[in-house]
Length: 289
Image (cartoon, rainbow, N blue to C red; front, side, top):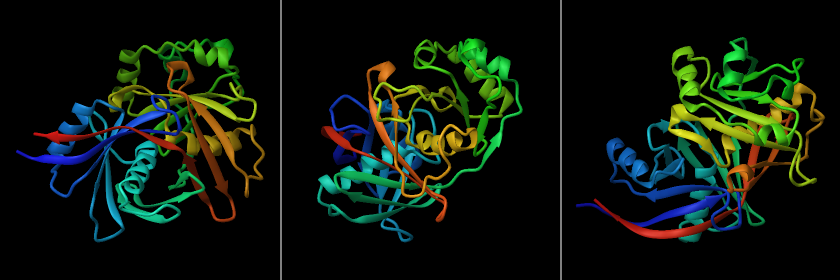
């Protein structure tokens, strides 16, 4: 029997318990792929992060949904930073490098926020069947601007703009149809629907994220989508391209009772994309199997 001590559940992109996006965090060098997937299924959160020692970076980091391993997860990385600091493994106000499936990712703790530098994605126009996708998401054609294209980020996330928070709140996806489109068309893995209307005036956009192919019908707060969202908004002309030294706050999770806020910054001079947020521990335990 294996016993894993100090297994945490952490809410990321919030400083309030039971808000933001929950992630499991486990630190162990003794787990194989099958065990990690089983543990992630047992946690049944959108992602569980597995930290281990690394010869290439400060730590190795992997992320599993209840169904599959994924290449990138923002909120579980923020949760991992919080875990390492809370356990005293690293100090506050330090920089850490994680070896991941997306390469070496740099994170830091600064002024009570956790920062993650994301790989800058490729963004291209989506040329697939818009009608079927809009139907699967129950998006009223009148709620979108026909002059605004759909964008595909890293051939994985499909971004769709809607005109209002009201339209965003009315979405009732047919997850069976969406999963079928994802698997059969193989044009995208997940869908991000966003609007420039926000609940809080100081914020810049609101997003919802659907990924049934990953075993996540709706993700509460998605770091790997909110980062690229800033670049999509720039391409659409919805945000001024002069983003050097600027920071934008995006909203997610309000419609499902898991309000979260993500700070996003992009430096054109350095071609550097970063996200930041808070985190709070809500559960500490021991896992036996």
